[in-house]
Amino acid sequence: MTKNYTRDYWESVLSGLKPEGRHFIDGAHRAAATGETFTRIRPMDGKPGARLARGNAADVDAAVAAARAAFESGIWRKKDPLERKKIMLKWADLIRAHGDELAMLETLDVGKPVMASLTVDVRLCADGIQFYGEMIDKLYDEIAPTGPNARALVRKVPIGVVGAITPWNYPMIIDAWKLGPAIAAGNSVVLKPAEQSSLSAIRLAELAFEAGLPAGVLNVVTGYGEETGKPLALHMDVDMIAFTGSTEVGKLIMGYAAQSNVKRVALELGGKSPLVVFADADLDAAASAAAWGCFYNSGETCHASTRLLVERSVQDQLIAKIEAVTKSDIALKHPLDPSAQIGALIEEEHMKKVLGMIAAGEKEGARRAFGAEQVLSETGGYYISPGVFVDMTNDMSLARQEIFGPVLATIPFDSEEEALKIANDTIYGLAGAVFTKDMDRAHRFSEAIHAGTVWINTYDMSNFATPFGGFKQSGFGRDRSVHAIDKYCDYKTIWQQFG
Ligand code: NAP
Image (cartoon, rainbow, N blue to C red; front, top):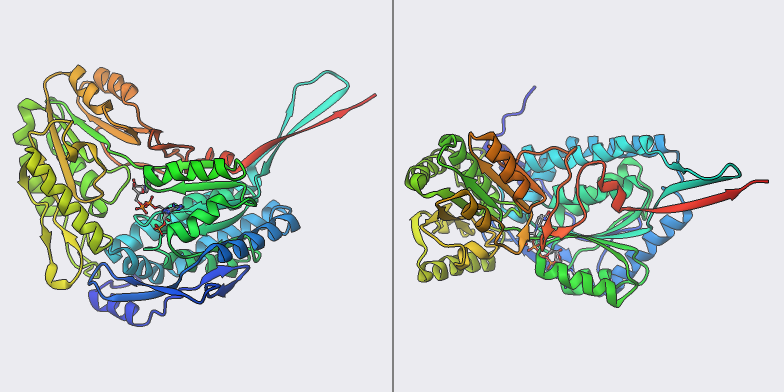
């Protein structure tokens, strides 16, 4: 029987919820070594939410020690691949079975609509764990070519203890992007979620343990970036940091790796992705893609299409269509309302920052076409309506800075050459798109945009088979796809001489 996801249903899920806020270390919950906690404020209504352990270096030490012990014991990495696969598949099933609860935890923490948390975030998290679970018994090593009296095995071996540091915008999905391949490859992990979004991470670790993942293989330490993330990245017994977050903190992570034990680093960082619309494009499709590409998740998406480059002759027509799509399809409502398409921003401070960037952009001459205002303030939560600025140039701050709010910067162009120059004139290179009916141009343009993913006549389509990550200051290393396993492995050569 399909469930009736009404507002009352979600209110009842919420009232039955008792979120766990302690670390998860070595298969058990643990308060912070200092006993300190911090309170998460709910973005949907500004009320106090869960209390979380405020971790520090001592908690990180405990989690790393548990991860190291599990790794060295071989309790996970040396287990029969078929058994490991079964455990990961069971974990994925448990995530699905606890989908409503996980969706509510995510919404409480980050303010996105609970139906989006359920149908997108929970689903993709479970799919991610399943994808890498299914790979475990299909990974082969190699035998390298040698002379007749030798045999050289090229083994792919797990790195050891992986520190995963993740952001708050798609917590469960990004956790799965790291945990799936890292654990499937045989590593142990210490996960440090963003301070704003720890609840789903703790629950994911509990469910992994329930599925049969041995104690110590997945540990979660909650707390602030400076107090937990930094000691994790500086730790001498951590072999790799897999980081997703801002370019600013990504640079710090590289520094910590260099200052400590030259640990490996993989970085998924910020973006300012161009969506380029030529006059010959299907403008309805382009408008829909531009609106959803920028405004989904309230613009808190690393690869959001935040720069709309449009051939000048169709700018007004396209903006009118984007306004119509936004107003008819992208409902901004309370996150527990099942018809909400977008919800609250992550916190008050962030909302004020976005409003400040909008005001600064207007001072520079960006012209507001519609939206980009604080709304639903009567809820006590942090909401900004989707908004579009037009007639901009690429040097304006709204076109250069990653806003992480529902703000679209429109820049008109007059030639393909100019469009390409503007598209690539950014420090980022995460994603991009081109809309045109001319397939020669689509091919030329998609090859020439410097970005990890380029879409043609669509936006944000993907699946687990495709790698995701950035060029330039959007980082390096890839999440998703079979290739993601590689970054959690080292090659080891075993040369045997005969005769
Ligand atoms: P952030 O401020 O860089 O934080 C990311 C993570 O790093 C959080 O867990 C944070 O902990 C931690 N952290 C902060 N300072 C640290 C330090 N000194 N040492 C170690 N860890 C530290 O990013 P965010 O605001 O959470 O997320 C938004 C950013 O993530 C945007 O720039 C977005 O583009 C990027 N992002 C990129 C991708 C991608 O795949 N390329 C995907 C999603 C998001 P605290 O929260 O406790 O500070």
